[in-house]
Image (cartoon, rainbow, N blue to C red; front, top):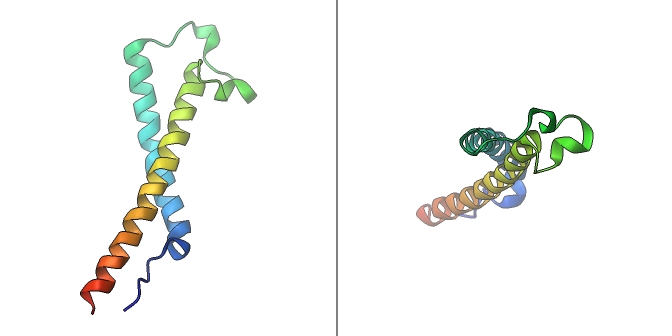
Length: 93
């Protein structure tokens, strides 16, 4: 039996599951880290536009944590689904 869970077939599912889970975990990690270490002056919270992605601000740091965790979890999902498909294919022989 062939592996039915190839990265090409599971890409959309992996992106949805990985990014939503990863971004949720990244926001909690970023907020907890910034609360533990301090976030700086209130005037430098992040704001709108490009400031929202400046990692030296509170909002920017959390946004970058969310992006990094989301991409990492999506990659983990792609790898794990592919390996699961390989195990299913080997067991069906």
